Length: 237
Image 1 (cartoon, one colour):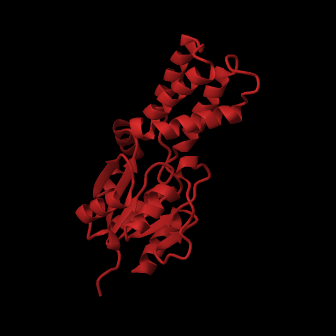
Image 2: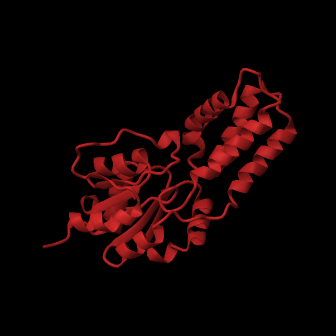
Image 3: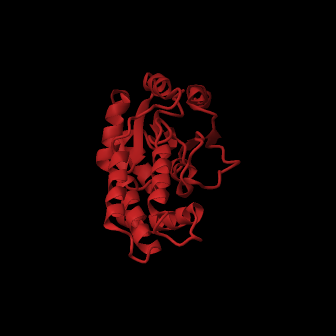
């Protein structure tokens, strides 16, 4: 009997390696740099809300990743200071964004073993979004690149994108599983496309990547970490 699954897709950031922690570190630096230039009642929490709002409205312009985040920090700094933010602060925000592009890649537990084990029996595809050069850099530094049959760096993860990727890179979306830490990007659109979605929680997940779990859908699964993935895939067949 033919296998039900032939292709496994992996998200990259905060599924295979740490990423969100660097955004949190930089956001803390953002708050420190603006502390002396913003109203007293604008505490770090509300400043973070203003930054998140800027990121959300800028997704359509800049997409995901460090560059869009840096531009959103600059935009927010100008807004909350009524355009009085010093040029020196803007310069330091740019430097903070550039620093994010040089942070070393640290794999999450079981990431290499999970990809390598499945690569022996299935097609494995990396499906990620963000800055093209930065994602290529992280993949190269991760040491996982040779394990993947294909790499897809996309601007957004939608049902249509998943149908196209797994139709081109596999035997169709119905015989593919997407694995990731984002319910909104890795799980719900994959299931909506007719495929399998497996959620791997991460302690730090960006607010805009959160979504309601499709509980009760037979194609939805959740695992504690990547050490459980091969067993789950084998159980599906």
